[in-house]
Image 1 (cartoon, one colour):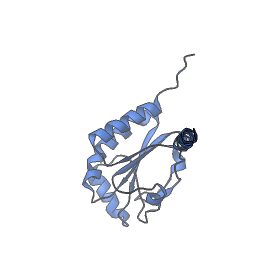
Image 2: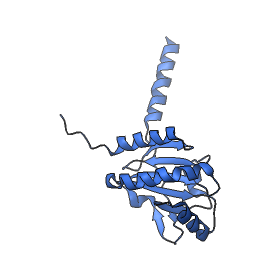
Image 3: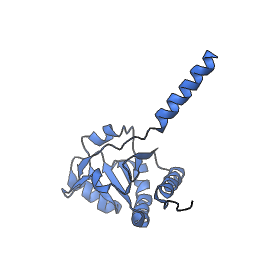
Image 4: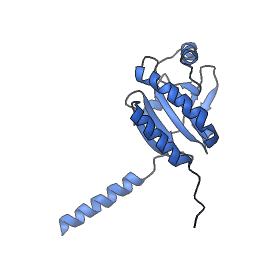
Amino acid sequence: MKKCTAILISVLFFSAYAATPEQAPGFELTKPDGTIIKLEQFKGSVVVIDFWAIWCAACKEAFPALNKIQSERAADSVRVIGINLDNKDPAKVAAFVQKAKIAYIVVCDPQGTTTKSYQIKGVPSLVVVDKNGTIAGRFRGFTKSEEAKIIKLLDDLTKPASTEK
């Protein structure tokens, strides 16, 4: 009986812990042109945060899909923000963004402060933040399978509230 009780308490504790929403850490980062971007500017929108580096081949594969999400989901209040982690030279980042045809907001985090606050372990990594500022999903790497999961999550997060009773 004690063993069953201990298992039940453990399950309830870990279920409650897992169900606790994780608030997305705020950030204030600079675009290559010097414009300051804050996460709080996008409250009320679903935000896809893409942590990437210039040298990362898988990151480059994600750019077209993220461009498509930005263009096709803007009406649903979905925004994509790319956070470059590896370059301290804004001019190089700007040139790369233009060459790679990245069509969403890109900011620089050469000190890695956002990487630490979001506990990013590698690139590419994507974090989806819901309209309330809660982390709704984390994705490491970028494949067609991961892309499908992100699209499904965005569908769920932007679905109109049901008015049925």
